[in-house]
Amino acid sequence: MTTKKDTVNIFPIKTLISDLPDDLLPRSLTSSENGPASGRLIIVGDVHGMRQSLEALLDKVSFDKQKGDHLILVGDLVNKGPDSPGVVDLAIKLGASAVRGNHENAVLNAAAYINAAGDSLQHSEGLIGSPPVPDNPEADLPGETVRDAGIPDKCASATAGTSKKPSPATQNTALALSTHQLDWLSGLPLMLRIKLPQNITSSFGDTLVVVHAGLVPNIPLEDQDPYYLLHIRSLTRTPGDGDEFIPAETTGEESWVMEWDQWQDKVASKTTVIFGHDAKRRLQLGRYAIGLDSGCLYGNKLSALVIATVDGEVDKQIVQVECADTPVAPTLPVKEGDKTAVQ
Image 1 (spheres, rainbow, N blue to C red):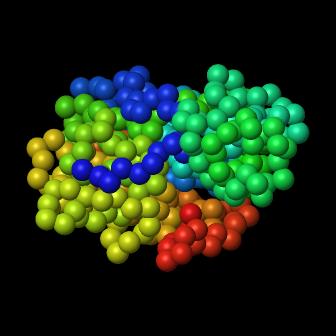
Image 2: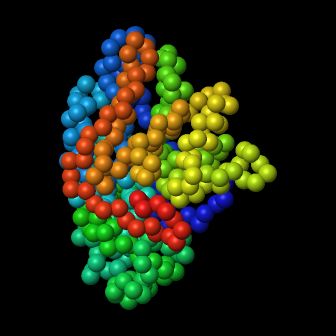
């Protein structure tokens, strides 16, 4: 069980869980023969608009779509960094899979908010097929209050019930993205499930799940809280019940990964989670959870998990490159008492 948080600031979800199609799995994973790998999964941590760093990482792993390599991004492709449109364009060009991160969610909310603001702030092409604001009329959008925004009065009436607006940086990202790019982001699932074939040996277990922030143990994927799929960093146990947890956005003493590993040790069918979001902890290597946000945005490395098969067994390798873009300074804590400076 989790303590439900108000999730009205989640941009309308088109797909909660998407299964990676068999034809996107590396060909060696779908073959019964024990031969050399003919394709790989390249799962990359939070890029945040750092296009040159992403290109450097793909070059280092010799990414080749024609040989069956498939790129997967753990969310937060965009925002804060120098070239969000370039990152999205590259992902689309390479046929990448991705999941929504909290920054995609914020940018989509910002684009909807800008559309509702009218001609003075409207995105040049609009956001096709999306409502002007989240479905719930009481939705709160990230950022400052409407009354402080300097936005035309008609925007406030169009977003009646909202009390906040996007941050200037998030607005700028939304304005920089084309309709096609925004629509691609809006269609991303919150979770990507990869079912591994039974004819290979894997330390991952039976299933891989790619999600931006993490999962709460002992809860089916379909029942996970969308808000915490985008924001979780730690867990506390519910008093008096060792099997129930309270998720938290703050870093806390321990990552949720420790509890996830302990839970997986108890279940027959193992699930390994690949995630990002937690830049403060950098690379996290649990038994059944791997965190790939190594803080490239702040001048640290960009990380990838490369998955292939060798002689019928899954081979996994962490590959990193130095930041190739101009880094940004970490933001200040957003809440009193929150010691997490990296958001």
